[in-house]
Image 1 (cartoon, rainbow, N blue to C red):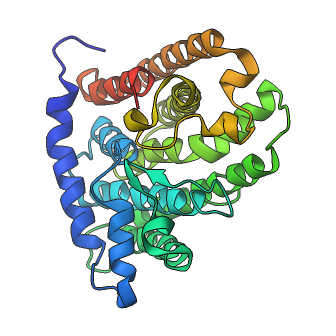
Image 2 (cartoon, rainbow, N blue to C red):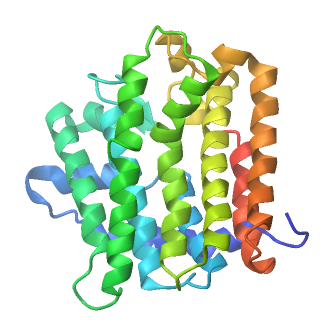
Length: 301
């Protein structure tokens, strides 16, 4: 990361834009208390890593302040939020704590939680496809296609299916990597792709290393997540610590041990940074992506 760049200073206005937009677009007036459950799931919590990656990638290709980038940033956060609502439900992970507060199904009931997740998912695609001319049709189509694939059976949903089918099983490193490439990595990669899709068309010479960056960062995120599940407490994480081991789920720590997992996370971070260098993009424009990659590996929750 280049000296002199302050990630917190960069993040502050971007986070403010995202929070305000999410608050504006997730409507409290949805019927029968649905809006309250949706807002509870989305607002006042979370690292907002995915929206920040969208905005950082958009900046890298010259589209950092566009309406398309803001909408894409909020859309992918809505998909992430819906996935957490469903993931926490009794039929899946049966978790009671998320972002330091009771999970949505605990707070509102299982049926309202299911509907809130469904509504957040569809709202994401509504945000990507405004009818007011603010986002060109070709950008809308690119972004909707990227997000649909990343969140569907070739992405997050497929990875979750593998995860549920793998409880109590010993996976190889390749199998574990594939599961997390889909379950966690697909949305993180998509964040980078969405940001790039909001600007002028980029060349293959830029797009390919950006994809490698997103893929490697997504895997690094999951390795660190597995490490923190072992080393951090619930208060720090804002969710139940040790739940993977308690549920007998395969993780990088259970597969290779804590120290090897930490070495892997560091190696992946280095690979991600190398991929950024290979884009050939302006060094200054890449600073936010570099800093976010470092944050992923160094985070404590």
